[in-house]
Image (cartoon, rainbow, N blue to C red; front, side):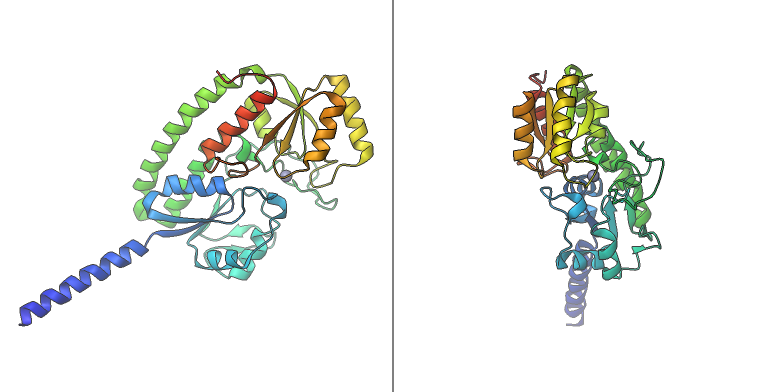
Length: 313
Ligand SMILES: [Zn+2]
């Protein structure tokens, strides 16, 4: 009788342990959809990743939702782009979430073992000489939209692997293995995409927001101006008139509209100049079928090539 009892207890304990193991996945919060994707790939079955911003939102104006606080409060790690791109929502949420693994310091940067900043090692473009934010500049530390640069994918993935290994050192080898597999996939895509974009090199273009610098570096497209007066400052009639003149003088044939920005204004500009419009995403999931970093990068490149009248080949 006693033996049966012991066996039963042993079975129950085994089941309980298994349940605890199943729940032991690291709780990771990622600020954008492509970070959710890359963190899921690098973390594999060892992580549960939840996202914050939707791909269709303007990253600079994400409205914090109550569910964000709950997610951050329970998280073991938060994965973010940094360079102040999430400043509208991440620092205030971290303050409310009161998670000792991820707090904010005096300048509202994430500090603590759970903070995984994906911008480490990124060669930041458009760094301003004057670091003042007094004029409402949205990019005070340089252009933070490196998630739109296909060749920044490997840097993001490496930062996530290093971050997860810091949070959960026992599984470092697993994260490294997942990273290696993901990088191999990414490298093959990057080689393909580099061939695709060759015809874009030196073509001039304008965009709505200054979020195409890294895409410009990868494709060779030369972005000469934006519809916005400066990052976060809406276009004015005077500026748009000047832009028409500038585009005609410089022979700009391509307008890049990020999905979340005004289509009528871009349409007007296209009519005035004869330029074609490419609609791209500033984040994964901004456009249908772009839920992963690879699909998102590929769709952006295809849309640019199509609007430029070039075939991917
Ligand atoms: Zn921006």
